[in-house]
Amino acid sequence: MSKYDSDEYINSLLNDEYDSDFDSDSLSKNAGDSKVDDEFQKEFRAVFDDTAEVENKNKEEFEIVNPDGTASGVYDWIRCVIFAVVIVVFCLTFFVRIVEVDGTSMMDTLSNKDKVIVTDLFYTPHNDDIIVISHAQDYSKPIIKRVIATEGQTVKLDFKNEKIYVDGLELSEPYIKGTTFSGIGSIDDIEKVVTPIDTGDSVISFIVPDSELFVMGDNRGVSMDSRNPKIGLIDVKNVIGKAQVVAFPFNHFGYLYD
Image (cartoon, rainbow, N blue to C red; front, side, top):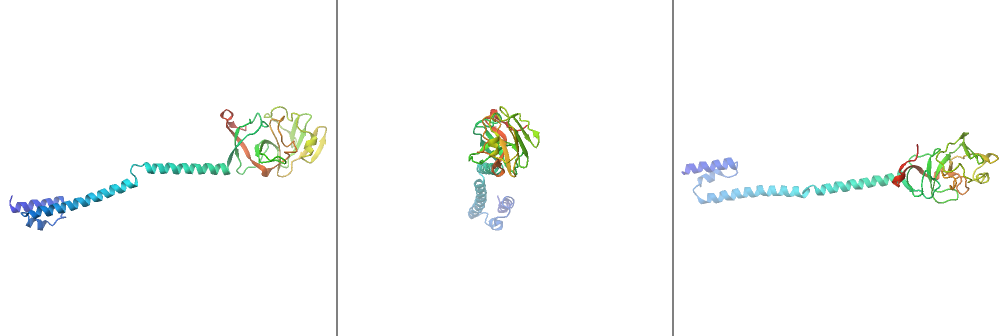
């Protein structure tokens, strides 16, 4: 190969492959010199090493940030779990509670050891609501009873005929176990709880005072409720909330109202 041909060949390689990164004029003048090969190899190796170093660095950075997606996935999963727990705790603290029924005074509506979901957000007691009460007049434990009458309503208890009237209307109580009073309570007991407006033969009438409730259990034969001076009328401030659903056991699961 002639010197001219050698110069052209080297220049074509440099221009096409390496985009003039080398001094082609200097190389062409010394194409016959062995130093050309050395300089070419050094230049080529330097460029190759720089390129490889950049590629390795990029790859390393990529692997450090997210090697296979596992770390990121675990972090997202943990964050979701923590968020869910916070929401549940918040709801259980401010919106709903789960209480356990202790005793048989609300049978057959509620059984002993039933787990009941209770709500209290912006709650105002109404007739026929099943409510959880923190404590009563002379009874320090929580109790669960049904609202018979609210403040301002007139109640008439007819012990002889086993009937209850609220504002002149006889209550229909398909939920009770036994009879309306089942032999529990008397005019003497009620007079210790309320101020009568009328009394007669086994009959007493009274008005429920402001901010108070008259409550009874569904199992009238065993229920200690507003008929008993130890329970008496319930201050609405002592109402924890309204029982909504039996959550457990599952064979009792269901909404408490028709």
